[in-house]
Length: 433
Image (cartoon, rainbow, N blue to C red; front, side, top):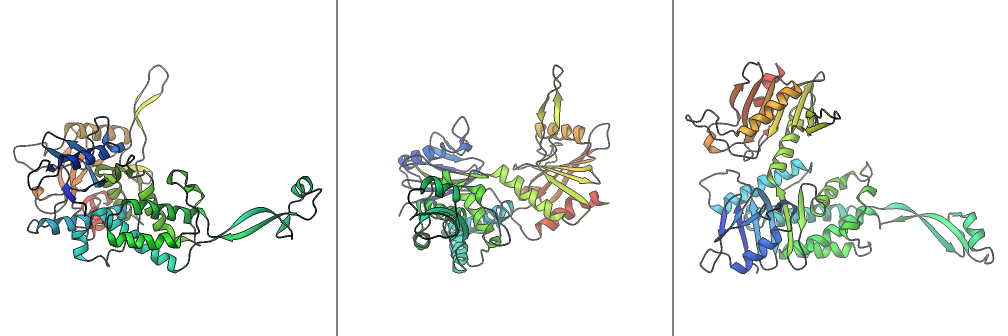
């Protein structure tokens, strides 16, 4: 059984020969795999930093499955401090799966996963299990089919006669007819994507149970053409009322096979990785919660919109330094609120009037205030015990000489109960007045 190690963001795993350490050989495999990720950056340390005597996780979470070991990196979400580490990690996995389901707009049912499973399995195995269960359930209802057009030369007419081809190809051979017809087929783009996902996950999974599920699914897709992930025709898949029930599986396949919010990577013999940049995941998660919170109200929410530029070139009037606020809220066409998410920890200290907020973040919000004329701007951070009390607004400041308010607020991602409603009540009650 290959060993599995679990870290949280910014924690370290010592390497060496002592008990509790990872062997230098395995550490080297993990570092090499991490450096193949686009999140690694120019230094190569963006996912996992190889320090002198330890590996340090960074702001990227997920699973690195190297040749001889697996490393799981979990987000630094505060859960019940009295729990043992295994139970804490289980609770964090649950919250991370929830964040992914919201960010990717997935309906994920986790009721069949027991408390022991959450403790024993890594994030990757949990996601593979969810995918396998959803796919098996869908296939019980029948595999998708679609009519595909075919051209073939047959002894008897089928469909319609392709007259130009008949008289150019078979002018001297009237025994063959150039037919054009539609045939109901299972070998369609959606099924090829599902087969590619099953094949990919078979290489990633280390769980005996998941491997058995994947082998059964591989057998069910035996008649579907195997297409490499890079050659899949994603644009050919149209989700409509006839195949709406496959939407979640299609999105999960994108999660495993495409570089949208994460990356699956690995060179020859290095292994595979499923990674998520927490700042981007937190931004998308909060953005979708805000969309839910203000649905069916007078407010219109735009994610990653605005696109106004800070400067204009004097020479050619070309706009430069484009801005993209995480969340813009408008009422009657006017921007009323700008929210920017920050996956950072702020502190509430009597001796720190800045409350742990970085100067660069404040400058960014002042630029937004100038460009978008919003009366209220919020820097939204993850809540933690050091802030005390409940999540919501933590501090408010007024831009000198103006009425514009810049505030800091927090959201407790460890507590998913009524989170969209809590955001609405904490952040938008004053906006709606």
